[in-house]
Length: 483
Image 1: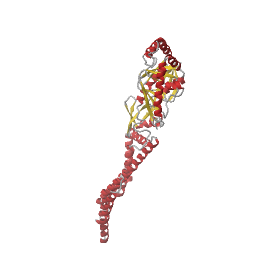
Image 2: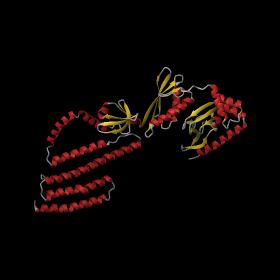
Image 3: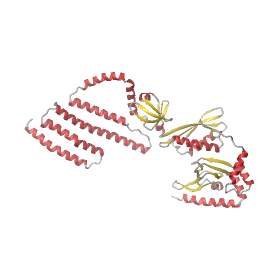
Image 4: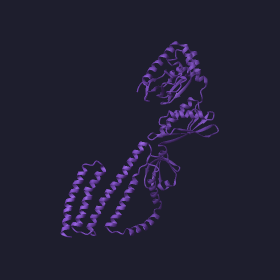
C-alpha cells in the first residue's frame, strides 16, 4: 500500500470517527423515541467502532479479508448490524400490536395481535438468515452442502419424532391463525373451558369443573374449534328450565324475560334468548340463553337469575322445575282459608290499615295478593301503568326517579307498613318513579276497588294518602328539574 493511501485512511479515520461519535451523542440528547435512543446507543457503542476497526485492520494495517483477524472483525460488524435489525423488527411488531389494541379498544371489536411465541419465531428467522449471510460471505462456508446434510438428518429425525413435530407444526399454524387467545372461552371438540396457556405443542384448558385439560396441538388442529368469547365479546350461558304444560308458553317466556331483565350482569347486547326446546309428558322445556360481559362472573349471574326466577314463578303461580331442583312444587299449596288468615294477620299490623274493622280487613284480605321480590328486583318501573296499591309487610325498598339528563336519583325510602303506586293508581298516568327492593321483600297488592272501599270507610286515610302523594310529587319535581 502506498504511503499516500495509508495517510488518507489514517486521516479520514482520525477525523470521521470522532465526528460521527460526537454527532450521535448530540443526536441522542435531542430525540425522544425509545427505539431511536437504543439504535443510537448500539451504533455508538458497537456498530461505528466495529466499522472503524474493520477499516483500520484492512486499510491501515493491510491485513487481507481472508485472514482470521479480519474475518473476526467483519463478523462482529455483521453481529452489530443484526442486533440493530432485530431491534427494528421488534419495534415494528410491538408498534403494530399497540395500534391493533388501540383500534380494538376504539371500535369495541376483538382483534388478535401476534403472540410472543410468534414474535420469537420471526426473530429466529432473522437470526438464521443473518448467520447464513455471515457464514457464506465472511467465512466462505458452502451452505449448499450444509443444507443437504441437514436435509438428510431432518428426514431421519422427522420419522423418529413424527408426533412431536406434528404438534409443533400444528402449534405454529395455531399461532399464525390465532383462533383463540389466553382467557377466551372455547369449545374444542367435545371439551369446553377457558384457555389458560398456549405453547408450541399444547393448549391448556380450565374446564367448568375447574380441572385442567392439556390438549396436544395436533389434536386441536383435527377438532372443530368454537371461540365462544369472540363470537359475542361476552360469556355465553344456557339453562334448561321446565314449566307445566298448563301454562301458556308466551306467558312463561314473558315471566322469564322479566326475571332476566332484573338480573345484574345479563347483557342486553346481544339480547337474552328464550326458546321452546321440547315437550315431555307433563312439562315444556325452555332453553334460556344469555350473555355476560367480560369481567363479570357467569356463575354469579346464573345464580342471581335462578334466584329471581323463584320469586317471579311464585308471584305468577307457575309450576317451575330446574334440572336439579323444583322451585314452586316442593311445598304443598296453602289453602284459601289459610291464605285469608295470613293476609288478615299481616294487614292488621300495617299502620295504614290497623284501625280498620275486622269486616273491612277480611274483605281486603279476600281480594289481596301477596307477592315476594328478591333483593335488587324492580317492583315498579318508571313509566309503566300501575293498577294496584302496594303495601310493604316485610323488607325495605327505595324509589328512584330520572332527571333530564337521564341520571337516576333516590327520591324516598320505603319500609315496613308504607305504600307506593298511589300516584299512577289515582291519576291513571304512568308511574313517575321506579321502586327497587333493597332486600327480600313481601308486599300486599290492593286493587283500586279495595282502595276506594278503604277510603270511603275512613276520612283520615284520605288525608294520609293525599299528604303522601303531595310530598312525593314535590320530591319528584325536584329531581325532574335537575340538569
